[in-house]
Length: 288
Image 1: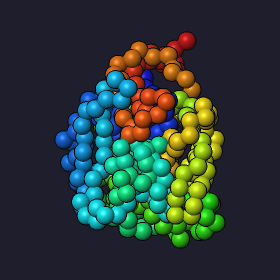
Image 2: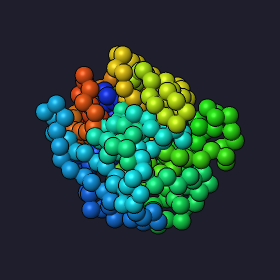
Image 3: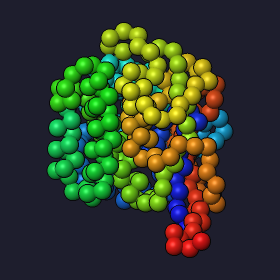
Image 4: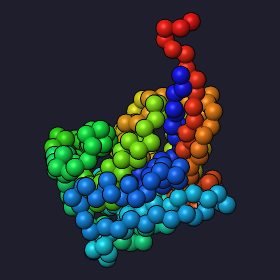
């Protein structure tokens, strides 16, 4: 019997948009993905999905473009802190675009300050598959718990200034949709590469990783090579925490497909999230 494995190689951290880009780069059905996303009653955005290169490596660049209020910050605010330096997508991106800029081009999303109950209702009222709903809510719950702890508030008083923004809702639900499409037997992640330094937000300069990100990463092996940039966003941290069953270097498996999700910033390392699918033979528990 064979076990189908999805391996997340977080060599340059992880964010929501990079995860979607990497999964789509495996060859998953973009049309089916978009049709599923349309089941969520959130409008006012367009998707940009295109092939591009980072340090000569071809991958998929995913971005959520907000149709209105373009004068605002397109770069969400981590925990209400508007401008985390997340600039993955050349700034056109949300919190994701991990290490990508929070202050993308000075555009600021149409921030609706939703709380966890609002987001769960949005998910529950959609026609998404129940497994997708469950995974999406689990990811949001990790973020809400971390924000509540960092800000010393009850969870129902935490407003998702950044993760509640349209693009982050699309990222989190989009990842759940693609994982269901791929349907691996097991998801394994590498240890997470985190950045260092400080990033500017509404409250001033805060340390990298952002406090909520670090809270979410509890229990997960992380490391830093001293890169002064935000490599992991709260959304990215919550995605890997919800999805990965194990954290280790590349597991033994027969490699099938490889996908690259591109970040925006040009770093001293290649700014990509690499995902690998493969098969591993496993013995039936009844046989010796």
